[in-house]
Length: 266
Image (tube, rainbow, N blue to C red):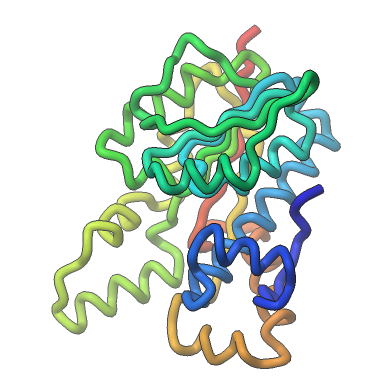
């Protein structure tokens, strides 16, 4: 398995060093830590879904908004025979292909430049990942419909969206208001998705909500996090934050909200 769970996010560790390069966030402590925790949770969910036989078929998978390709590689490592990662940033696709793409008689991992709004909906996938993508698209409802269309009967999808009623999001919102600063487009997009809206947009007669989860209950990309990162207690605090964030009802106040759905059509 290419990936291993970690809460220290130590730049000297080989995997973290590779992630720093791929995502260009060695000096951006907040993004580095919060992204690592999201990958940790994704792997935890995958292990559970496979162990409980929620994921039944491993023929095909798609990673929508694959960025530098790490999630696609993890999906392949979990046993999927044909994994496709797509993104709209050419540089990311080039990195993903350079580091992870391969093809042999048993398995394929490939990456293509493709907009999530233009996916061929005639092709069906046994597994779909779409993490922190929908809120950044020009037509979010079209992407949601595409996900529903391409999820094969019996297929499983994991979707993550920012949660506007999380403590980090609320603090950021207050920061802009108190300082009377104009909110940037990315922040506005993030504030469009309280957890209950995210659940609602994927509610459908043909799909069953398997579970929800979340990550990052307390951290904010702030001087406090950057100072804490350099201390011996950081890994412990980060681990506590991680496991608190997946508990009910605290998960509903986490910064990144995870939704797992299954297509129950026959």
